Image (cartoon, rainbow, N blue to C red):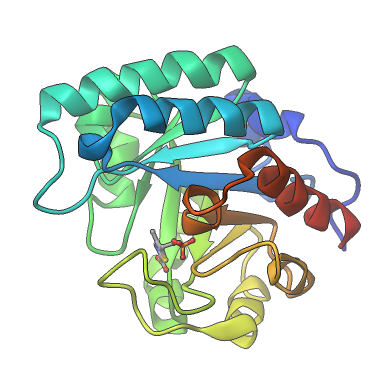
Length: 235
Ligand code: 3NM
């Protein structure tokens, strides 16, 4: 792998992340997306703390769908997450909600193709790091001008996922490679990634992994997180 030695610290310092936008020196990252806490807020905070202890480098807070808690509650949770993450040097990204990211003093915001534009985020909140989802070559083409402004692209779904109900078709390792070959910005692979396929995903060129169910369904979270990270170091 061409990215040289592991250095999780790069992502532990937002300034450094911003300086390393070319991706040349960025190391493997493990992003964990969590949210929809209406079922159990304490469980969410507990998962995040454990994952922080195990070496996760970024957490993305995402509350989706009809059942999500209201904005005030989301803000309360985001602020708690920020405090927790900051204590471990882990970055907090907020999915798809610039207001929530600003008010919770999150490190970044993650947007999809149909969410707030990168341009609008930069204008409104230049301090925020930005992650952008890209699923196809067409989306990549459409997003070319945004690439210089963002921290990473989320590419997927690499494999079928049951977590995101409106996910696009799986692009496979070939789809991931094709996009990786076109960009300098770090590529975070997402969708159906787990302990079994992580090595293949890293081998295809991913700079990091983003996972949800691999963590939420794991009954040995710390081991799972450590394994996902270790697979990146070995690849
Ligand atoms: N975004 P799991 S796939 C949130 O392709 C999300 O943009 C995707 O969950 C995309 O690790 C996905 O359980 C779900 O498959 C990831």
